[in-house]
Amino acid sequence: NPNRDRPDVHGGDRVDGAYVAWGLGQVFLRSGQLKDAQDHFKLALSAFARYGEQRGQILSEKCLAEVLHARGLSSKAETVFARSLLRARRARLLTHLEIFT
Image (cartoon, rainbow, N blue to C red; front, side, top):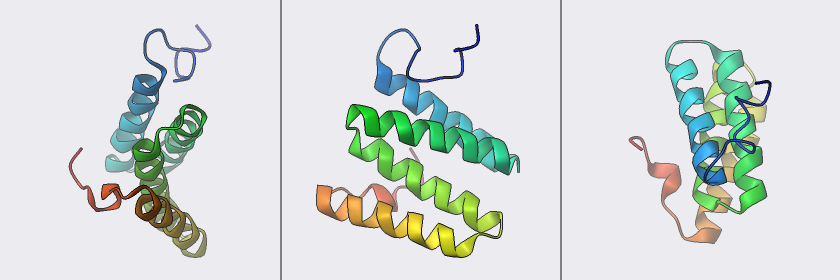
């Protein structure tokens, strides 16, 4: 199935699918597969944005910033992280401080 890795076309809850993509991004990040991690965090971010899931957007942006920094794109990482922090503060969430999810 060509859509099996797209969280927006999984059966069931669409936001759950986005969290699966985010979780896979974490696995790739922790194993040093930065390109795959980046792709999954972007996919998750897009799905979270589509469904209005603020916490997921913040988590995805924070992790995407980590990947960008690890890939030597620190300026872009700063921009993405700043966006996640602003989003968290506006939503009155502490998601940007989460390290265990």
